[in-house]
Length: 290
Ligand code: MG
Image 1 (cartoon, rainbow, N blue to C red):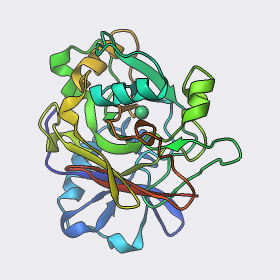
Image 2 (cartoon, rainbow, N blue to C red):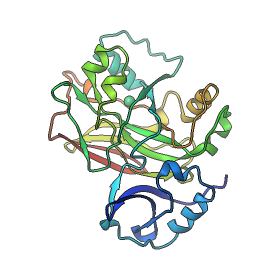
Image 3 (cartoon, rainbow, N blue to C red):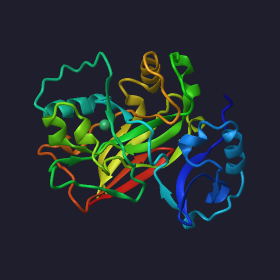
Image 4 (cartoon, rainbow, N blue to C red):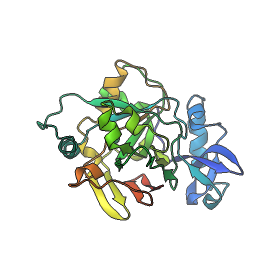
């Protein structure tokens, strides 16, 4: 696969229709022919077409479109890494009053259901009738670009479409109470994603990117993706040894320290709070709790 220059892939609403597109030179948008990003990845020649359009001026002013999550309806649950930064492993163990030995011999995988991902500027549902410990987790998300199985670590890069930002919103007491994290992380409105996918060629591999989150403008998380315990090459190689990873698969690589549960006492989200997740080279994903 040949690597192309900067490209931001978006899903957007324009004239009432949901479309896929690229942001061209100067910031305007050009739609692509495909129905959705998932459909696009199965079509031949999409990359050449997208590259050409990304190199053009764009046909729709950026201000005229409403951005949606880059993959608004993932075909499968999102694959997530649990406690994949050491400092977050410590704060998580402290919150759950568990012992933490400072070692993590194997990656923790779980999944998150996403009926519909929330776009940049959209709302995080507080589910305040069910949950009173709503938390944020800023994460680098990897999007698989073509179906793969048995990928060697050295070849992982070839299967990555690009990167986006994901907020793995979590209801802590539900996550803890039910033992499996699934329910507490899968409620409607718990997966802000975006604002776009930046193609992988923009970054060195593995990407070493500053990652931060803010709540109401206050810095909460501040780390770098180079601190992942299990790196992207390890994760994709390991998972693909046992399961086919389809194009469009989203893998959330885990969150650094500074989640609300890490504070003593914990600082959970409440309606009206504004959460911004920021990753160097990608952008900022901002959402309001309601
Ligand atoms: Mg997470």
